[in-house]
Length: 280
Image (cartoon, rainbow, N blue to C red):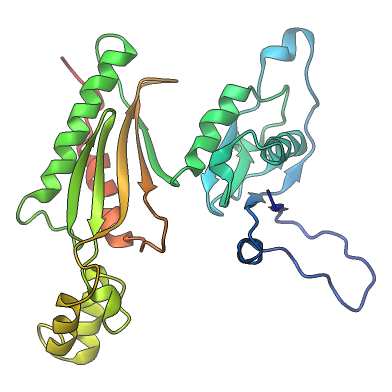
């Protein structure tokens, strides 16, 4: 891994020099053929070292979120443990990823974070993960997961219905643990610089023509790659560590466009309609 960098919110001492060394960035790492991981930390707080005896079972609650999303403090032991795991290559999902780390409520660490907790929290970097919701129901976790996965497949297929309202066309691929919503290229990626159907309305307003620019529409219709996959969302049901539903991006290689408007619609409806309990 070429670059692992942690950024904190508080200033650090600088050497007395008239010039500062260049800071590593994900982009410079990639242009040189290296991988990178950027870890954003809140205000660092002192925390107890590994506990022994009766306190050994008490672990700090760590939280990970993709991007730079936390203002909560982070204890020094938790930050050090996370960076050590990243540098040792324990978590392939953090390669070429940026994430935030905090300890829940800024609580001081009373013991080491179990490996299973790191595995589950850093799993959020794969995709990255956009949503994680617990579910429940009668029966064992495997049966709850099976019913949740079937519900997710039906939910995904509902976006294929006429009038579903999604600005980007999609297809659906069934998965053993849920479904994948695959976004399709509209052709507007190659027309006047608009990213996709989600940005088409911007062009309509700027052109000042109801229905948009006909020439632009014609170019979009003839654009290479129209109708081809352009990123996806995976809707997944887990049985462990607890029954839950997760949503993460997928197939973003090759410059796929993030469909922010479509993603927001899908996530909002999922949170509204997802049953809290899956009955038999």
